[in-house]
Length: 98
Image (cartoon, rainbow, N blue to C red; front, side):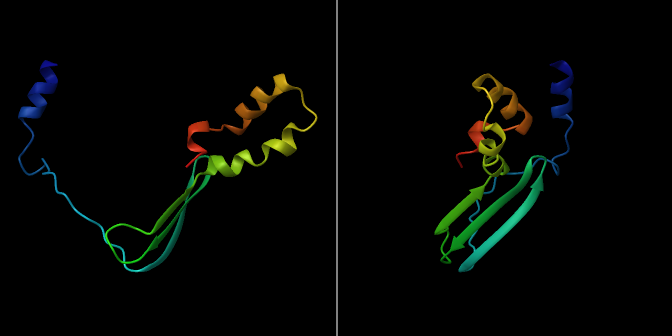
């Protein structure tokens, strides 16, 4: 704790950022972007009417797409094997319901 207190006291004032409240306004239109993650492709879809709050925002998690292959893979398997199959897919369950 003593080392951390010394470090905090010696941080130059130029590095410490002030909290700024900002609003991002997108121009009216549709925006779609995707990025590659460790588990697959993460997608973002935004529909804006030009105001400060978007009309619609949709996130598509790679875990949601990866869950779709569970039925073909698990068909004919035992229930006990389902845990191993899901571990192989490396799913993050809370991330699926975005």
